[in-house]
Every structure is written in structure tokens, then in C-alpha cells.
Length: 81
Image (tube, rainbow, N blue to C red; front, side):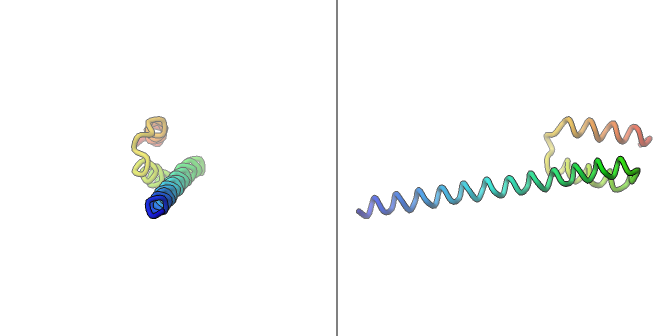
């Protein structure tokens, strides 16, 4: 009985920790996407400094996104930087 209870409690705690980890990862992903959308909006509006700051903030959060790195490089080139 004790072993069963221990296994059930352990299983529940593992499930809850995995759920919490997935939720926190989703929140970080959502925050990163907000930075990317803000960077693109600032770029379209002509706010160069804000766009650069927001692209950099996005790339710090998601360093492996090479497509956005190329997009940012293209933006910098178009701005003459």
C-alpha cells in the first residue's frame, strides 16, 4: 500500500513538473514572438532604433533563429548600417 501510494505521488509530482515546464516554455516562446512582431512593426513604421532594439531582444531570447537573423541583417543593410 505504501509503495503504491509513493509511486502515485511520485507520478503526480513528475506530471505536474513537466506540465509547469511546458507552460513556462510556452510563455517564453510567446514573449519572444511579441518582440519579433514589435520589431517588424517598428521597422515598417520607420522607427529604426526601436526596431534594432527589438530585433536584438528577440535574438537574445532565440539565438538559433537564422531566418530572423537574416531578416535583421537585411533590415540593417537597408537602413545603411
